[in-house]
Image (cartoon, rainbow, N blue to C red):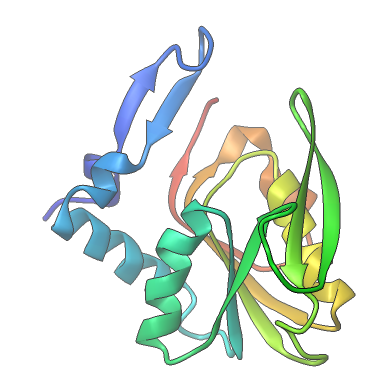
Length: 174
């Protein structure tokens, strides 16, 4: 039986020398790989009680939607600034070379909602931390975070210490 890692394409020296880019398009392009990834992520959080699934644009949508659908939960979009049509709250966070801002509709999470955050990857944890802040700014409670890939050496887990993080695959190195 294949593992998720068998479906991930590793591209050395991208986007710069010394980095191994973990390409998930090869997981998505294979029905068995996609099913394995979603099923594994769901298994990792099967003991978490949550009301809502939230995911960041765009790869958080890819994995968050089937998890929400399979568990009959609503899905909340977290998008780049300026992409959501109704009133939003926003969170700005640091990137390696600048900043980014993400938003969520202010009525998408109710106070007390237990929210499962889903994304494809956690590296330094900046995006995940920003999503947590958005959820909490609306009165939501982060029930947990699940990602397909965790880049361990970039210490994203440390940045969100105090929150449960589950990953389907963990890679050492950059």
